[in-house]
Every structure is written in C-alpha cells, then in structure tokens.
Image 1 (cartoon, helix red, strand yellow):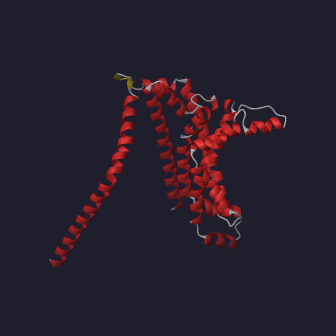
Image 2: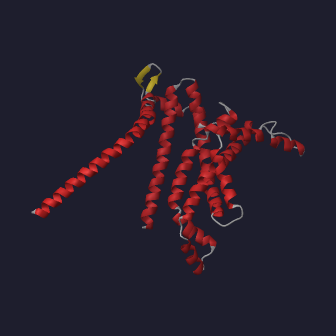
Image 3: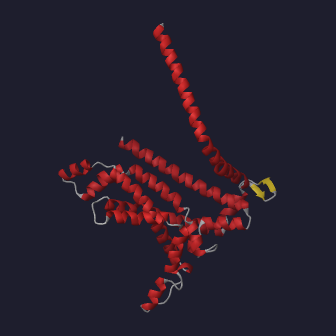
Amino acid sequence: MKMRGFWRSGVAKSKLIYRKDAAAAWLFLAPSAAGFALFYLIPFAMSLIYSFEGGIGDDRFVGLANYMELLASQSFRKAAANTFYFTVISVPLMLVLPLGLAALLNRNIYLRQWLRTAYVLPLVVPVASIVFFWQILFDWNGTLNAWLVHFGQTRIDWMKTPAARHVILMMYLWKNLGYNVILFLAGLQQIPRDYYETAQIEGAGRFRQFFGITIVYLIPTLFFVTIMSIVNSFKVFRETYLMAGDYPHDSIYMLQHYMNNMFMSLDIQKLTAAANLMVLVILLVVFLMFALERRYSNFME
C-alpha cells in the first residue's frame, strides 16, 4: 500500500511539473502566436472572406464569381503561366547548381574559404544594390551593350525583349544560390567519411558513390531545399519590379505584378482571389512533397 501511495504521489508530482512547464511554454509562445495571428492568420481569413464578396462596399456573397472572372482574365493567365515557367526552370537549377558547388567546396580546394564567402555575400547585400548592379550590366547604355557595340554588334534592349526572362533568372540564381549552398554543405558534412572509404575499398566509383551515398543521405536536405526553392520562386517580384517597373515585358509579368496592379486599382476581390489561389497551389505542392518524402522514408525502412 505504501509503494502504491508513493507511486501515485510521484505521478501527481510529474503531472504538476508537466503542467507548469506547459504553462511556461505557452507564456513564452504567446507574443509570437499573437503576432502571427494578427499579421498573418487574421488578414488571410479576411482576404478569404473578401474573395467571396461582390466588391468594395458590397458585402453580398457571390460565391465563386470572383474566381471564375479571375480565371477568365487574360492578364491573370499570362501571369500564372510566367510564374509557372519560372518555377519549373529555376527550382531544378536551384537544386543542381548549389549541390555541385557544395560538393566542390566540401573538398580541400585552393581558396575554399574565399569561395564560400563569395557565394554567401549576395545574401547579405541589399536587393536595391543588386538590382542597381544588374541595371548597369543590362541597360540600353549599359556595360554589356557597350561591349556589343565595341565588337560591331547591335545593342539589345534586354528588359523589353524575351531576353528579360533570362536576365531575371540569372539575377535570381546569383542572389539565392548561396543559401542553398550552405544547406547542402551542412548536409554533406554530416555524412561520415567511413562510408566513402568503404565504398572505395569495394570498388565503387565516384558516380556510384554520389548516387548510392551522397544523394541517399541528403534526401532530408533535398526535401527542405526543394520546398524552400518552390516558395522562393513565387517571391521574385521584388527584383523584377525594381528592374522593370509595374508593367514589365510580357515574359516577366508575374502573379505578384498582377496582384500589385489589382491593389493599385483597388480591385480587392480579384487581388484576394489571386492570392488565395496562389496559396492553394503552394500548399498542394508542399503536401505533395511531404507525401513523397513520407513514401520514400517508408520505402527505405
């Protein structure tokens, strides 16, 4: 009986300590939770409500009318197609290029520390400074056109031709490669060297080591980098806006341009409908990535 009473008192004390720890945790989380709700959850809920209303001052429920009108808009379809194209092109490049650079920087090469700094530096440089640098390169009177004229070629108005898409892609890669390089480099350094030494003893070449060891143990990192690259590909508006303005060339007219123009014209219903559709697409892609990662983990087990 004494042992049972001692055990019950111990359980009661454990529950009390757990409740106190939980209360302290919620107390520390409360400011962040309140800020997240105030600046993200509540505005998102309001935008969802607005997307089903008739217009400013008209709070009638109109169902999916705003969404149907949005999908019928040529400007929206063009913006969605350009954003989809940019995501499809940029995400694989944001995986392959940083992984190759990280594998290179993981070796004992000459000037390795300086190269690491060079890839990280664009992350800390303000976007306005980066855009100014690229404008100097690709302006009508910029450096690149000056070299073209010097070699007897004609000038190219880079930002007013389909070449603008490639300019934005290069600027985006240059600005964001360093972040993925850091992530991949951290993942590579977590792989024990013994695995590679054992594989070499068994006669495995570099190609087989890369796909049999490196890629297998980098799956969690690849999963995270893929999700972040997809999300970041929808945020290229800032650089594009600073480079080309409100109404850029058709090839770089993104969803954020469309939503910004709807905001300037106070068409809140189309703005919120477009934002909600973009959130829905991102959520579907993220859930699909989680499902693939879960299936792969179960397969490996």
